[in-house]
Length: 446
Image 1 (cartoon, rainbow, N blue to C red):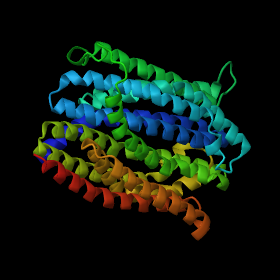
Image 2 (cartoon, rainbow, N blue to C red):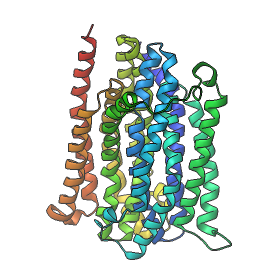
Image 3 (cartoon, rainbow, N blue to C red):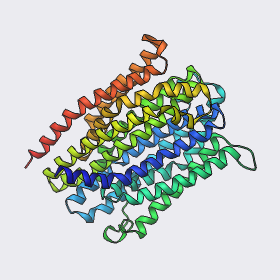
Image 4 (cartoon, rainbow, N blue to C red):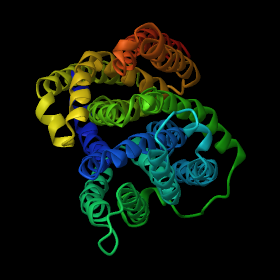
């Protein structure tokens, strides 16, 4: 049973992995392109994309509540209710767009926490203001993304992701390096490309729902419902802790760029390069976790506990083994990989000194990622959020700040990465027992 579950997870997770890599690959493209423009543009995208990614991940995390609800309905053979859940998800996405856009247009309170160069700050503000135009499309697409995963239809996400990546590579290079009428746009050019890609992805998802294989059995756009308070409340009850968990986890890395701004553009840019690599590595356990959530959610809806157990075991084993292998390979190839990102010697020196930390935490990051997503499949989201808050903000960011600026200031940015390793070890140690208790509790209910 475990082997069969592992094969099924790999088949489900592989298209998700490609889609996730394509998504994060757009950030890599921005970093590589701007690494050849100027250190100011690279530092600006390091800070700006971190903030934008935090906003999108937090709001998309709320919308991810569509996934466990839809998976339960699918497993319980209640197909007639699936279109309604998707439609309520779209309504919720439009509602969440409002605070998201306002924050991106007015990020002054957050940027005020960092002592950054004035020129870098101006570029960050321009970058975020432009990206606000793509947020409605991004959130609508993430709702579609959660729905397709819940129903075991990840291949369309892979196709859209790859198309977006190829197009973004051309647009970002053209806008950032050559600009409009021959004037390079730098970080603004990458933002413009991201806007175009967001709306094309949203349009592609809508066309798939209307004309693709889900159209006939589920009729996603038929009998369109107005917002329903009970359903939206249930999505918010599940989704708000999920969104906060996403925000906490992603900001435990992205906010480092703000906290180390006083150490200089080269340190921020070097951290950005390694944060990119860490994000790429994270796509592997995240993809397996998303696939595990979907399959376990369907099994819980069908009350098939044997299938749920086998899927959870396969997800944990695959994620831990594969992530550890990837981390070690990255550490061995650190120098040529970092050199491909930037020509700046100072940035390279900082980045190479940090890569080893990625290899150190892969095993624990994989375990806590899968455990957290499986708990979502059981609709348990609040306590995991508390655990991650303590680990990632308390031990990670708080401990990193103390190491960097108080206890061992000679460590510099490495203090934050050491604290990040500690935080991931703690999260895996706390979420594992919680998952076991949750499984036993569900199965004891007749």
